Image 1 (spheres, each protein chain N blue to C red):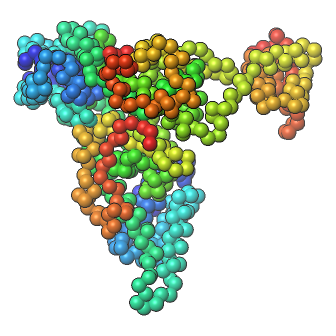
Image 2: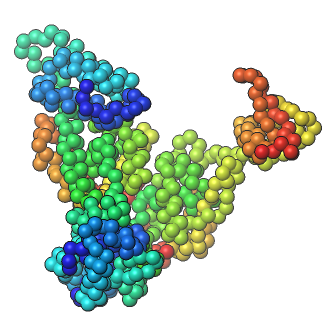
Image 3: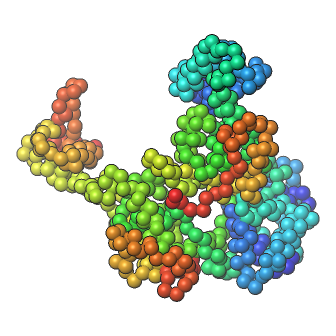
Length: 193
Length: 193
Length: 244
């Protein structure tokens, strides 16, 4: 590829939005409009002829490099097929507090854990394990969180009542730890949120 | 390029973060680990030999496509994308100590740096460079911090092992077991002491 | 003076941030400038230099530097104490300082490595564009009930301290307090704090009343005035036409 095409490729890759031709020209003061157009053609042809997973398209008010539509499904499916990732202790502790104290606000959870849980609550929300169930009283009417049906499903619980009461915890914990993943009768999580 | 290489290219293009080999393998259930490795090689070589504005790198805990350094200045000058700020000396010192001594609490980091690091730890937490990995023993069960995958990514490291070992540093300590920083720590998997 | 960046405000702390990362940093730079052997620091000279630089950089108010200065002076004093020839039990009062300086020097070396590697990475851009269709893959979570319960147990053990589980804080009743204030102001054009809060009010009632007054002032339902410092606050009914 010629040097200008490489520069354009790098810029298109790094840009968070489509870049109009006029802005692409600003990348190299020496380059004529014709040279920029030729470099864009070269880049587009290169992606097409060489068989790349991406393509150069002119839409949304400018040029952008996009993945080809035929790979979208595989990338989305991969999410489900991926090896499950063990949640951090911090995430589990936060989830545990929400499960036992719902409805509960961020401030209260943060106070119990001794550290701000804003980011963790956000990721639990994104995972669909908790949701906003109400707004609290008082100043600012804080959001209150509770667990979702998906939470029950992923822990193989029929109802929240099936969680052991706090005074029964010791008994529940004395069960063998091995059963935690993938065995019949034990809760297993699979599949993305 | 072979179809698997194209699929990997599409997935790597779609992701702003490094993707571990195991997750790339999940994109195609039929593909053997050897085939994935070969496809990654093909992709990397293609970018190098064909002369692209981007390259494939293995760092930050996974594979990532990045622009080549020679285009950075032009991209920044044209305001297509902005480089992140250089971290302050205080932030770097704090990160260095956390990286080598993790899990480590605020008091210990402050002691080594000779200044209170509370505010800096908070900002490093907010920027996702460190995280709470455990709670210490003793009074108040202090929070202990470790580095995150984003730390590896931002410092172009594959593993913490890639940081120099303490005995490779110019400064030798007379009592290594007492005062030295130790080897770069390994991130602790989950919280809870 | 040195080529330090001094802020227009003359704020001492800004100067410090631009120059040194802390007292150990300052000390280390003195040792380097004066070509001093770290293992044999001349305490009198380094003390003098340290205090001079602190003064020069207007760091006299920074607690961390003051603490280091005090430490240096103490070591200097200990060095002056007479010791007997062949005294095996003598411990160099500088030992701890030397250890800390060496440890800090290691940190600085690692910082150099991080700085170089971070610079390399900052010279490359990652993909910034998110095509709407393709979300970056996110691995599912492996959740196990036993681990969740273990987390509950951990939380309970950690937070058993001052009554986090026994005390249910009484929620504030701002709406109730607003009703009380409205009732009082319906009867009279001005009121005092004691007219809207009982003598034996509980903390939650006091807080509710305070928030109610602030909220109503914000909505221009009333005006709060204090004729002179420390005088009782007057709560004045705001006529509807005056609302801002």
